[in-house]
Length: 95
Image (cartoon, rainbow, N blue to C red; front, side, top):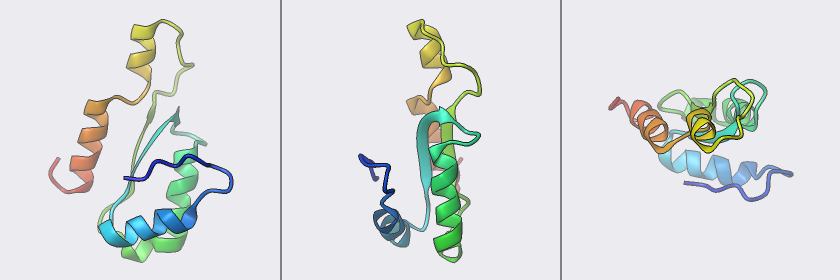
């Protein structure tokens, strides 16, 4: 697991080194799926390490809605543990 603390510049070297070990990637991003940081990371993985992947890159992102202020609605819109676990299992071929 990589926790990217710095997004500019994006640490491609660390991402690709992790991918070389695991041959899989699941990107979790609180942004929307469309035009998000997860899309940029997935694109870079595709450009730099496509042939090393054993599975498609998984992405878990927020719902494509404005993020609501009430806590229960916010929790429904942003990535939660069950969705992340499901994406990991799918990437591992166990979902």
